[in-house]
Length: 539
Ligand code: PEP
Ligand code: MG
Image 1 (cartoon, rainbow, N blue to C red):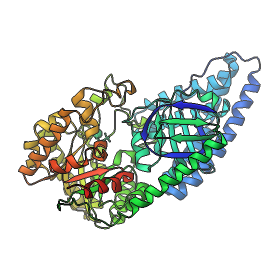
Image 2: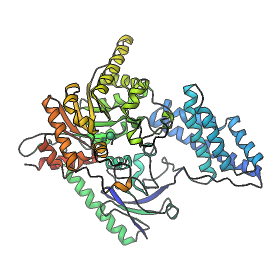
Image 3: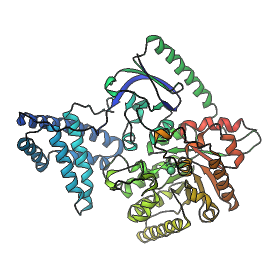
Image 4: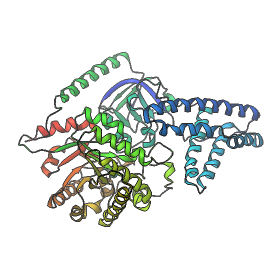
């Protein structure tokens, strides 16, 4: 039995097999080879295996996301067979008498740089593809298994760390829990775990070489512990605790269809946060009154090029239609900082959280923004859609946004494409926006307070830095006073204000939020009924 403690980001308990995801960015070492032809044969075998893996990914993607999005795996298959790429690898192995892994990694870097420097945007975007292919070959050469989600049984994901682009590619129906060595309680992996209602531990000092896929594990989010190879007695005890949790969850189900109203009759909207079209199932299952935050940037992650207007339109339309008249607030692209996509070429920054991100990218690169706005305005014609802009710091930004929305409206009009101008609100997640919330309230339809970033920027604490988790205190008086100020300024101008950051689901504060006058709390779907219970028990 191997036991480790960490920090729990979502309570729950589960028993199941482990699936170990090894980090792809491990160091490839240059080694001398006495038999270059044997190394070239290893590359051939690794490429053959890669072809099979890509074919499986293509077949799965065609069913799940359609032929257009799946085509990228066909492109990878073709690039893998490209003569220039393969000859460059073989020639390097022969002339420098080196190992296959090193030759593939270096050739991948060289080709990727060559593509990145091309003028043509399509070719530029291939830089990330060639990197992906080379990483896949290196993984195959070094015997690291790609976790194949299509054939995997539901498992506990064990990893060093998980980036948002890795989690977005996972088949959520196969994930029982997350356990990572690194990561912070405010990371998007933690947010995803809360959304999926599964236990998750971070900061667990495991040695991934001692753990293998298939090993039985127990993740206990209440005790913040993970146990590998548990005793039979512990397994039995865990199963009975899982049963108790199941019964508690069933009790909460009786609150479905009930109003979010206090004993004295005050009502509040409880909406859900989502990151993809597939999450709408969780929203309906948990009886949310609407969607208060659709993190649209997840549509941009885990892929090699921008999602097209059509792809985005289909996704947004599907969500508003499925929600059948209930409010759906879609946040425009909030990429940058921890949410990176190679094809955006954002470059390295010393302070990415204070850097080129979110609305700043959209205002500097209006083509990207306009594509998304066209898709949003078109989808708004199909249901109750609202748009929300992230990371606002000034009234000028809101004016600039509105003039871009005007341009998009004119273009859609000229082309005779049906659309609607929806409600438009902003996220309040910078201290600057709090302080000028009286002026901003005159310009927008609503405020949604992003307490994750608001806490980060107010307390000067990087929300991703696991060393600072003890200092990151969203209950800080400064944050609570800011929330009150924002609510009061919104109401002064007849606008509504809600919270869509993780604090909205903090059950210790539900009643205080109602007293403060918040009109909406948007929380992980798994928290909807728990927050409803708190509201209904309040005087
Ligand atoms: C926030 O900052 O509180 C928020 C809701 O946005 P995100 O967590 O996606 O930055
Ligand atoms: Mg934010």
